[in-house]
Length: 93
Image (cartoon, rainbow, N blue to C red; front, side, top):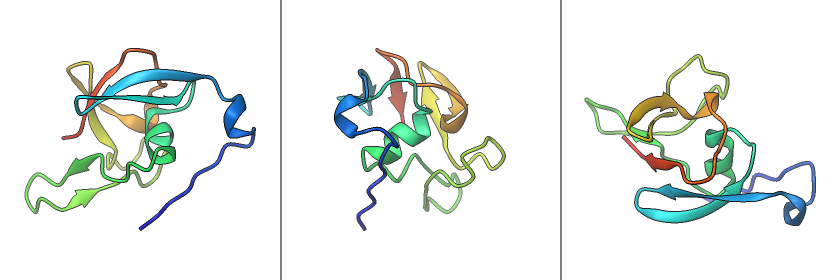
């Protein structure tokens, strides 16, 4: 499945920062929510369900559903509720 999210601005004009996502350095759009930045980079699965092991993706993108729960710098957080910062350590759950 291919998803292509685009900014209102041209993609080349978006400032980029580097985060570490599951051990791999990735350049993402600065100032975006972490969920939106990862979706834009084609990352659809941010966690797996703890019981069924089904892959889960961001759903509401406003902090209600917890589907985008992810580990950021050693703490579990909702990816839609935090802004991308240079040097973040991000891991899927």
